[in-house]
Image (cartoon, rainbow, N blue to C red; front, side, top):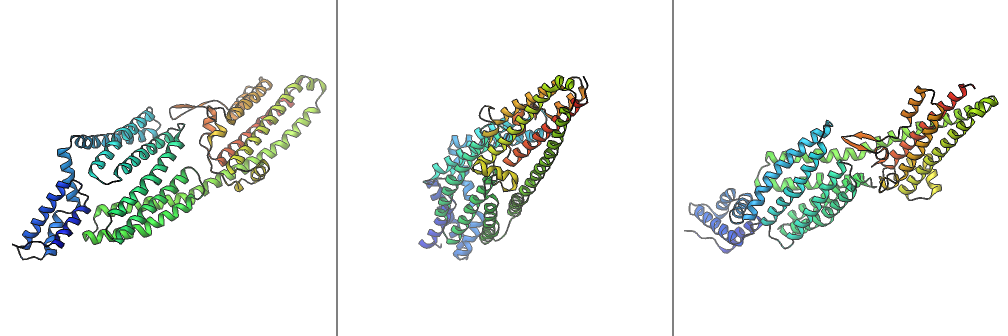
Length: 483
């Protein structure tokens, strides 16, 4: 009967260790079993390499890991419970979130409740149980901090996604915190662990390129969500690392390892390619076209407002040429309307200046120059609810709403005898709260919440245009009245 030499036994031990068999007694049993099976094949006239290749096909890394998982399942009751919990809650959360998504798309009632329930099951039950099960299967020195970081970062990120979908306060904080932990704690530790586990320079290179590329690509996604500068460039660099370097190296390595490419791997590869290419196209094209729309809207509003200014000046001149009896009767109303309109216009202009000053971190004079051509605003896609919304709905949008409401009251007084004109004024200067997606939103939230700077400026320009329109209609109506 043939026996293995020390070098051959060390090779088998090394392969078992690469399969991450962490139970010491189980690893010893598996090594002994594999050695016996190889020796048995060698007794039929095969050399070591031929015999070991046959046994490896029967007991590859996946088979060995499955054996360890089954061992855990049998001897660890907590592990068994977590595994069962993970399987059950995984399916439940997926079903609830899928149903909630469909209901959200069709604006059906209770969609938000189902979303919160699905995320609660996902974050509080499924994800922790999955992390615990994986932790029990992996025994490395940095395992605790590795699993703890992905647990905390993952939960914070998922809560941020939920808050973002439901437009709840704090979404940006949770998303940013989750991304920071995942990108700068979890992934670097994972890189360190994988580098230590890799036995060849080729494997180390694949791991390094893959994880660094993933960090850069996810960082670009975070920059895109928060409208930071450089998102497109980071996305291109990350995509190049993942698509043109990591995927070919990883594919070649897998092919050398198992001798073929499975259908499952091809599906995974195609899905990853579509995801990355779609992200690049969104980064390079969509933002530009959206900014062009806002820019064109702003230009059109400025032109219309300028025309209405000239028209209104002419209407005020016409009123001053009326007879004294007409002027005495309506002068107070006309003066109040003109004064309120000017106050509203000045407030709108000052808000635009404040937005640009905050987004670009510039002084008032520079902000005014940027507003002459909004394409020169560097932070045009910056989102900052603190200016317009405030912490307790006490931002500039609330002040604007108050000014517009007073202006509208003066217009109603002057046009009380003309119901059609009063209704038109109400429609053009509507500051009422709205009911959207089965929830009430204040006018301030509906108009300015989570809006980038360029969008808020466009909205303000449109409001100024509407102010000029109702001012023009009202003064024109008063000019037709007689004593």
